[in-house]
Length: 363
Image (cartoon, rainbow, N blue to C red; front, side, top):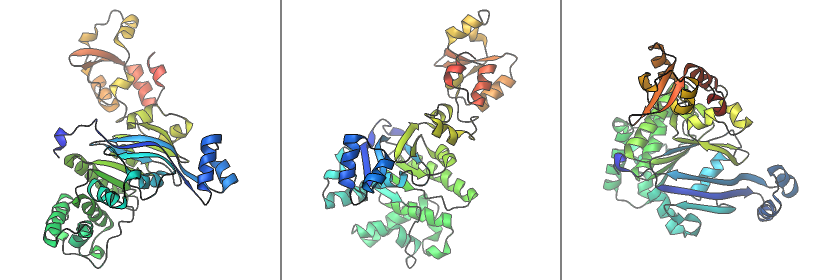
């Protein structure tokens, strides 16, 4: 699929009020949760069951990288395994490309996994006695694809991840980052529309990890793929995600862009997570600008059309640069030739400091 022609509004995965309860008494516990609204702690005490995912709802759109972030035990890895039915949900629906995967028979489920969803785990689990090419082609081999065809397809996938010169080597010859790329090539070889990533880079050194993150985002976007990416690292989620979901105790606490999460945390839990994150390259002009009419009332002598101009998507770093190069104390935010807002120096400073949106209006 041409990445420039994709319909970014198309929903590929629709997760609808999904729950997962583990334990011998899971059916009874799930019934009690629905009827009596028991908490996770009460379920554990009364039924000896664990609520791993609680009423999770989200959509994955075509061409999107959707990051699910949370600490250990938050339910994020359980959630991603529910998406391709490696784990059965207790209740709720998961719709993949318009099909309720709970209704698929075993053959249909295998076909869906093979053709629509690729998955890369933290432990890439390469077969040590097989070459890089054979490992990349393994999923196609399981599908019964002929050796010649699967090797051609696997080689093309390895070329995409920069490992074409390593096809005859073995996993023991590769670094950790290279092994992860073989795992990604194995997933890409089947040409899935959706790639599920479960903390694939968490064991890598920081520099290699950043390189892998950048390469994954570049590759995903250039190929027009969609991805659900699990991580416990907020910096990684911000670096990769078009949208981010933050989980706590099995609950999705907030879903939004990196700017939404950092500038408008839903609660104290999210606020604590983002407290140390720089807003310089995340918060945009549209989030710190004042309405034009409001600015004119406070500055009636100022001609907003004569102010230095910027775009709604300019980040705080860019706004600071433009402000420092001008003699004024305000910038006009222009979209389609029309001034849609004004960024004042005071509003800019409050945006850097992370002031609430309602306080920015008065800045």
